[in-house]
Length: 143
Image (tube, rainbow, N blue to C red; front, side, top):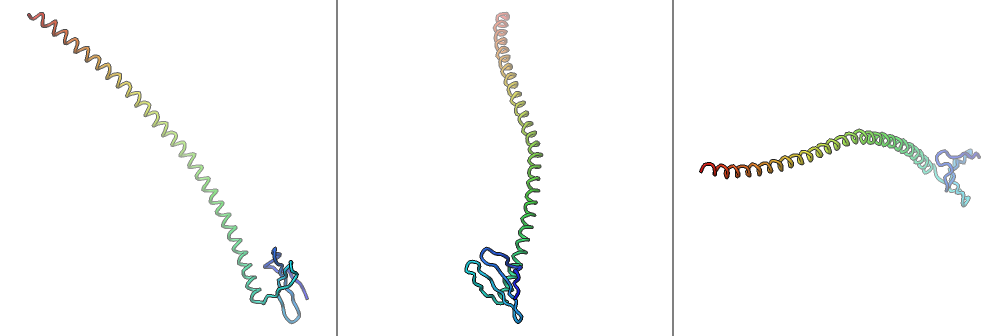
C-alpha cells in the first residue's frame, strides 16, 4: 500500500488528504489530525472536491490578477489626478490673480471717479457762486 500526498487539498489546518492504493481498488480518505480517524470518501465526492479546489485555485489566481490590474489602474488614475491638479491649479491661480488685479483696478478707478465727481461738484458750486456775484455786480452797473 502506497501513501501519496493529495495535490488538491494539501495540508489544510483541519484535515490532511491522502490517497491509499491497493492492488484491487483505490480508496480516498481524509485523515482528521485531531481525532486521528480516517473518514472514507467515495470517488465522486473526491473528484468533486478536487474539481472545486482546482476551480478555487483558478479563481484565486484570477482575483489576484484582477487586484493587481486594478491597483495599476488606480496608480495611473492617481497620476492623472495629480497632473490635472498641478496643471489646472496653476491655471486657476493665474485666473484668480487676474480677477484680483481687475477688481483692484476697478476699485482704484471707482475711487478716482468719486474724486473727479467731488471736484466737479465743488467747481459747480464755485461757478454758481461766481454767477450769483456777477449778477449782483452786473445788476448794479445797468442801473
